[in-house]
Length: 341
Image (cartoon, rainbow, N blue to C red; front, top):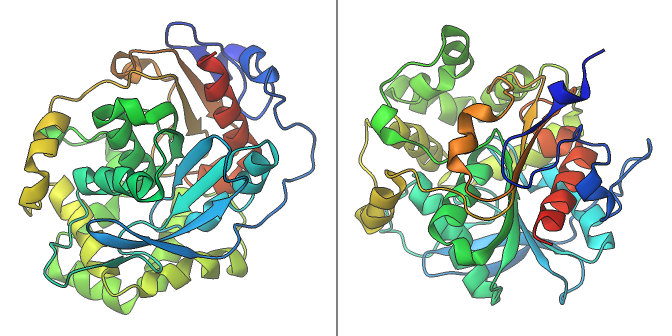
């Protein structure tokens, strides 16, 4: 049997170690989700709201006067990753907001002339603009993959807007100065699509085989997850967005420095190049069965967290952690809320 220390590690001032998905000392005060029953499902109808750049689709669950929780979905996933997380948080009084990222679902650019950028500064700016449009001053941020990166960026650049951060796979602000430094061979192999999307063959493949490619990524990213066809189709419907291919390609081409970013985000990218720290309380999670990003004990990224931070490894979870292990993600949100008290 693995020890408690293996699953949870104190990596920040004031942090409390626990096994993710089970009660910790800090999270117990917030009555963590326990037992075998899965939370209720459902995000409700899609709503729309305009920012300066986008007409954003989103879901809202919970009381309008509740403390806001802003959740970001990954790629090639969807807000349905939070179909069990959001109702459970709403039941506890939180106002849960789950937007569709640019290039996904019903989110559309307001202008045909806007650069179809997927760079990290654009994704982070979208999150803050979304809160501004709703009149939400502060929220707990939580996400994974693209949505996690967007909310890491938002937390780092606009710390006054973030009450606490739940981040799958630790600190997610890209260090573009290291873009040409290779990862271990197994990680490079897992990220095959990074390199595929640098090519025009990759553009053609993503265009022609959108759903098949996404299913391959789902399977490889989460080898233990037995998702259903209904789970997959709920996400795949988002890929019909007219900007989907351009945004996906630009995410990886900008990340690997083969295409420039949108000049409107140059100043923000300059700040991100300094690898700004996360100053608010944070809970970070790694899925032990993540086929994309190998699980860690969190110590290598401790230097990026200036406030209290707890790291957990989540047994059985792959890369799409909120959908695979919703109870663990809910408890992480409750725990980060307790770290501010």
